[in-house]
Image (tube, rainbow, N blue to C red; front, top):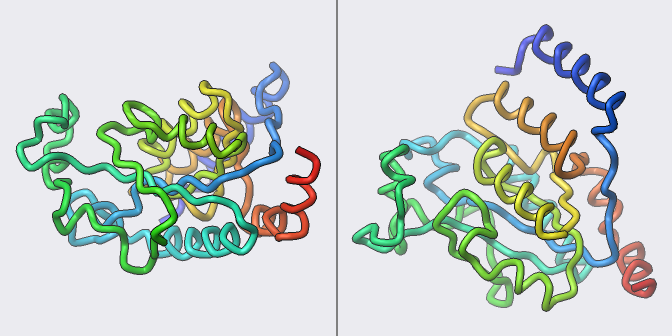
Length: 226
């Protein structure tokens, strides 16, 4: 189910108002991008999970994004939430969302969605919070690799994707949110989150345009300019 036309029209009205007040600018791409895939584990992509939903289009789009990044020599980082069996590292989040207790390291719900593949040379960043940056070494890894632009995919748009984009922007990275490669349980929440992220913290771009920018010749030219 998609958000109704009235809700979408209200977002367009707000977009014009925000733009008039100096929001909705473009951050743009830097010289060295990387893909950051957030939480596309079975706990979120399998409808059988209490936390999950059918994110098939998101998984498929992410697969296309990752394949294009590999062809272009662009690094891919996989950020995934997972806790110790005794939940000693889970903090207070499971008090708010009790099903978070299912996301135990090594369990069925913390496995990467089987439709995606993580290569041995691609880093898995285990996180304990919504943001892929909070309490992890992701920022340090990106800086060591010279990355200045993060192409964000995954779920959920209103939760872990949003937190990752906001923190990434605050840490000085240029967030590009790939529209088709992010998703949420609720379509309206998804659209509102994309609207707000695009207005304030990063650029929402369509998959086709991102794939075109990632084409190896374009990426090589960007590296040569660095």
